[in-house]
Length: 130
Image 1: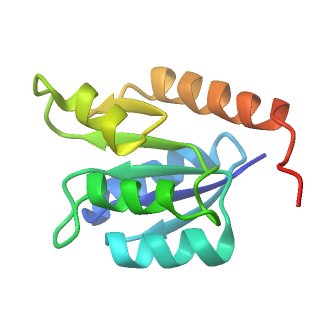
Image 2 (image 1 turned 180 degrees about the vertical axis):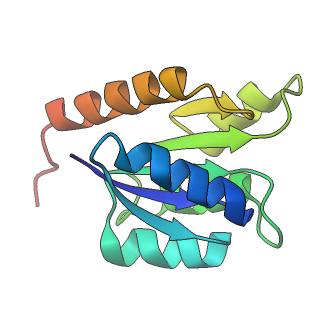
């Protein structure tokens, strides 16, 4: 199906996301911090990124802003993952350039719906002219 990059600092969460995504036949790449995630996004060009916003060092909001400001990665859909359903987080997700938002604990049925919708939208969008 799709190549999905999971940027998540908590190992158990990375493993859980990887296992659940693989049950849907996705190829899963993982990064434990924003810097590694940015490098992997630029070189491996995943179809979609799941971005934990509470990363150590550079947080997921800043990493997403960098992804969306880089012509190499700005077309990759990003779903923000946060452990806090804080008021204002949805607005922060939009401001950072996230395409969607999901709170932890993750409702995988809802997450898969969001992933499927973003991948379908991306497939329907023609590539930019060189």
